[in-house]
Image (tube, rainbow, N blue to C red; front, side, top):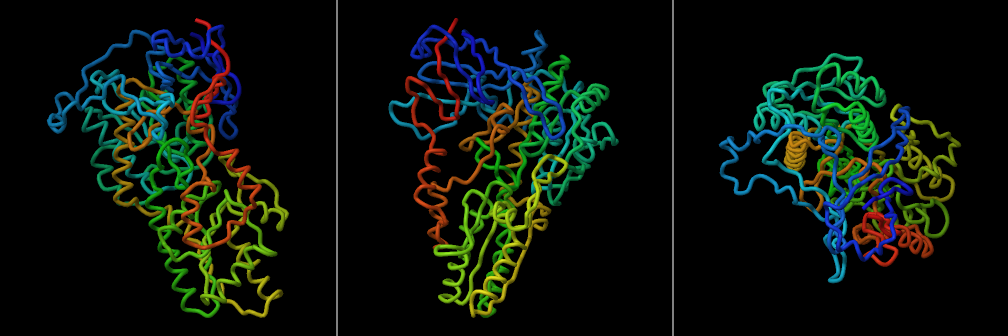
Length: 533
């Protein structure tokens, strides 16, 4: 069977003269993937020709979106017994090694007649590895903004390589992607990283930009590095994907592994990104301070700006956890200031009822209103991200101007921006445990010969995911979902959206529940035509 690609990343069609129902009779061994596409690259990086995704189909609508393996382009690689077989710490674990056929379903809420749907390869140690411990030369790099848990991931990668697999040559790439070709490396040993999980930031430094695919892979090749662990957000993971493609093009025996990092929780598919729990917990301090100020002063407005460029998860979850917030504004839900049902009317109403109001606004909320008001252009940072206007300062001034000119009510407004305080703290207990699982899963995957993948939990189980699944779109709050409804119930704020907006949102966001004749899988995988074997 031949799969040929059409449309955007993650969308495939089967070209053939066989009917779609015949998929049930196709065995995994019959599948040959020949899909290619072009990546737009990262920042200033050139477009890259991308190797074919590995999509395997089985009985009853089973689809496995597999990850690349070194043997895909370097045949006949030798294998070795996993050193964990002789590790007394793991001798007590029954069936510690993961079965090669174990996969995790992306969708777990199904109907009786639903197809099995999309699956991902389960993470964990394999009985055979593709690297000798003495031959491994690993490096770790952190890119983009800070996030609680970065040091924990670094520590646990080093610990997993050293304690589980006996690897001794591990280096940190200093200062992000540009450190590959412009900085010295930092030796990383268990002793050097022992207590870093108690500190915020990253001990090897980070930066935005500096991505040069050719220079980076030249450095990897020149230094003799054969395992690369790249920690960063969606832009960083796009760069990691391009690095893997160049490594593959050169035929290098190098495993390229991504660990997704975003404090905004905007990575799709996976349950949650590391550092998010800590961010929500720390955001409570700012909200509590705003609530104290608001309660203690007459006609007081406590305004808190939280992180969330395109996704309002931190603001939403912090609001739900606090129960002291009267209004939460996020990028996914438009709002307006003036007129019936507008924000100003609601603020005045709450102040008259309670004597105060607490507002939480995500940094990406209302950017269309801010841009229109300030007449700003679309400037970008070194990573290619659009520079946002400060919605917190803009909104606080707009509120002051409204109550000064349009009402007789005198107000106090206390504005709190804890952005850098939140992202610079060490990770909390739950994030530390989560970072440990991510790091160990990444190391197990690299040692087992997998490459060109990222790691993360899907329904509580660690998985190996192809890069395109986490870079093709962002995870966003669904404003027609129960969680958003719970938040609206908590704050009693107006939704600021019309019935028409709700209908359009449902049409855009509601996933298909089953495959029909013109089959659409739950992940957006489109299978339109038939098969040629």
